[in-house]
Length: 347
Image: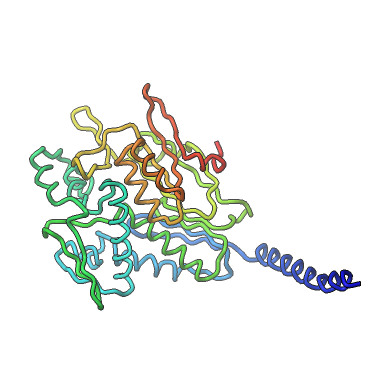
């Protein structure tokens, strides 16, 4: 009798759980997916999310905060003011975003032995990619610029109201473009999470965060572009498609930004330590991890390091996966990817 009584008490609970599950499933099917697009950081953003409410105004407000903190093309942004000599950064709103990214950049620089470096902009500009001067720099010019390159040359002093940014030389220039898009993607993701949205994809300039399912009730699937010489970005042939759910993903590559000089091809990725464009077989690095800013920065660092050194970094980070496209010994495209990524690949 005792066992029967226990079973009877469990029946209402079971009914409640079943009814609750049916209600949640029905709600998910009835709730529409919103799609918002626009321009930020000189690129396009796309956000798809399941919600009764259109949040584009809030999304753009968050992205504007990131722009006000990190955009070199915003003359009033914090990073622009620091590059112009201002030192004090307040600890509020956009100031917090700048400090968050600055601290993250310093950590990733240390972890990659300086391959990720937010002071590299003067070298990038000298090689003709920043302001398109188109003139190949001399060794003397590279040596002159290199003395102002290095994350260790920029520190900060913390106090109650804000932070003092200390540059060892006024000619040092900060550039967060290799992490800002990923960070902006994370910021929008956090906004959607605050609204308790469970199914979404945020994409800013190709850097992506996904959660839950897509409008077809399937896992999110993201393509990795095949690296071909395509400066106009008209060729969007895919190398592979990845099942990417509850992950952040970012890709860096040399196959679209390059130029030829005296019959030689120069990639857009500059090695902060040598001062010259990288010369190795890695064409594209896609990184998947928990935060898009992290994925963005490490993808850039891996393009500087090359594949073998990048693998040694991956070995220290179990939470991180990578998909590399490179040229083999006979000049053919080849791929390498983290073993843990295997079940996410759709060839």
